[in-house]
Image 1: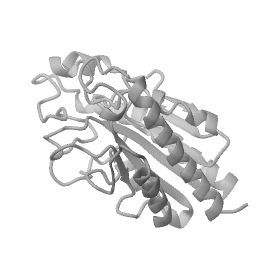
Image 2 (image 1 turned 180 degrees about the vertical axis):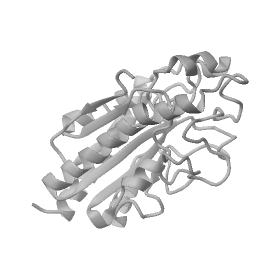
Image 3 (image 1 turned 90 degrees about the horizontal axis):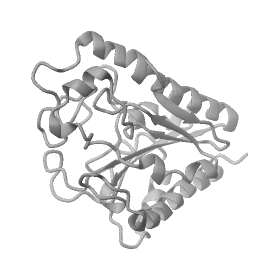
Length: 267
């Protein structure tokens, strides 16, 4: 397997994970997708671009190169469901609208999926694990921000319109509650945006698995409504006029994460 991720090592105790922005497909997956899936509509479009300021802040950044249609980096390797009701698994079988992802009989074989697990999924998680441990050893703590986005209306997955900023801390288990409260306060002060903490999106496998406040590793997921920075229909155009003010809120959120860390763990 060729390049499966990109990784930038920063200088601060913050790692940003971007697991669902990948656009690469294996030949088998590409050949098997139904027509409406070929544009990769369920991608977390443009998230690396939206967070391109983070490297300048000093954050480490890891980005998955392969599409979630190949294997979902934010699901556990045993494929146990994370949410009640409609959801997608480690090897997605449906689009977000509930329709089949693959043509009949064209799904990857169990052997091919086992290879995706070993050569695509595991390197991404090894990178997260190693970087968090490096940060914890270097600074005494580590901060993990799992960056996502989704269409603001997905009737198959949730009712109504999604809030703009959906913070997830696995119901308070993945980070210190004071950090979550400070992030909520930033969102509340962001004029024109809505937000929720541990609503429909409480944090996927990455947030739940790596967030460990007892070991001084604090993880937060942000599921951002795509209507805040792009056109939600093909060709999924990035909207600078929408993205710029949204980026300003993201910068304040990450700044608050770093400020909380400095206060909680003074050198």
